[in-house]
Structures are given as C-alpha cells and as structure tokens.
Image (cartoon, rainbow, N blue to C red; front, side, top):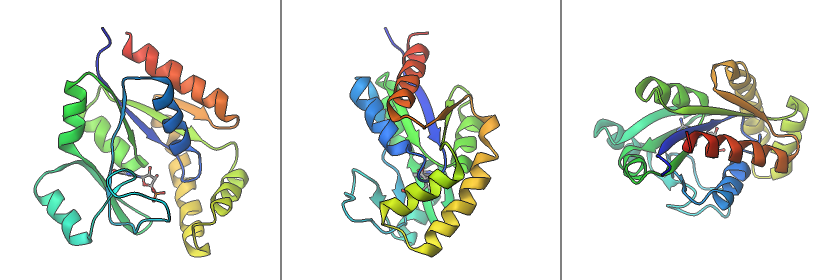
Amino acid sequence: MRHGNLFVISGPSGAGKGTLVARLAEEVPDVWISVSATTRPPRAGEVEGETYYFLTQEAFKKLIAEDGLLEWACYAGNYYGTPKASVEKALEAQKQVILEIEVQGAFQIKDKMPDAHLVFVEPPSLEILEERLRGRGTESEEIIKRRMERAEIELSEKMRYDICLVNDKLDDAVQELVAYVNATADE
Ligand code: 5GP
C-alpha cells in the first residue's frame, strides 16, 4: 500500500505551480492539495475555501496565536499560511499531501518535518516569467515589480530543494512531477 507523504512545491509567482499541481491531482488519485490562509484580497474568480481562506490580518494573527498554522510567511506585503489540522488529517489518511507555498514556508516545513519532499518549479527564464505575470492581466505594475524581485530571491534558493523542474513544456513538467510523486509514494 502507498504511504502518505508531504510534498512542498515552490517557485516564483508565474512559474506555473498552480497549473502543474492541478494536473498532478488529475493524474494521481491519492493527491490532496492543501488550501492556505491568506490576507491577500481575492482575485477575480478565486473562491473562498477553495483557492484560499481569505482572512483579515486580525483573524490571521489569531490563527498564529492559536498554533493553527504549520508554517506561515509574509510575501509581497501579505501573510500566507498552511492550516495545520487539515494537513495532519490528510497525512493520517495516507494522502500525497501537496503544499504550494513560497520558500520561507518551505524551509520551515523541512525543519519541522524532515521527511517532507521539496520540489522547486523554475520558469525557463526571468523574461518568460515576466511575460507570464503580465499576461495574467490581474496584477498592477507595482505588484509585478515586487513579484519579479521576489522571484530572483526564490531562484537563489533552488539548490536547497530535493528536485528542480523547469516548466518549459507543461506536459513534460507534469510527467516529471507525477513520476516523482509516484516513486516517493511507492518507496
Ligand atoms: P499568490 O498571491 O500568487 O496566490 O501567492 C503568492 C505566493 O504565496 C506564492 O509563491 C504561493 O506559493 C505562496 N503561498 C501560498 N500559500 C502559502 C502558504 O500557506 N504559505 C506560504 N509560506 N506561502 C504560500
């Protein structure tokens, strides 16, 4: 029988983590994707409790104080964190648990849970990353600038991850991720 595992997926905003993780869930039936809490306002089309739990700063700080988060970090001016109870429940149920989080949170997880598998998703280049961020059409210039600065910091941490996938051709990156998750689960 497959055992439960924790996978952390990081990479610059616009690298395609969300799409990759959604495709992984279509292809691997025991994948469970964690829903994070954030103080960032919802973008058009984002659904409370599905994309994120959208919280006020006050509610987020309360969660921290109650030890309700497995990790949390501040990213481009907003707080983001992983609810602890649901992740623990999914691991007990032997799921392949996926956290799509930024690098500070990833290292907090690795410290607390050394068995976690860290996956870094890299864009083919910074130019392509910027094009993708602009192409979304959801972010202001100021936010794109902050996210590009952040991307360079994140890329400098990729060596600390267990594997690094270059998201050039989406189908190839999906297959690499599926193979990694299946190999780990079947170990
Ligand atoms: P976005 O605002 O584009 O949805 O997310 C911004 C960044 O926050 C992304 O790199 C995303 O992976 C990260 N993120 C999302 N949820 C969490 C979380 O629970 N914890 C941490 N540390 N980062 C998160």
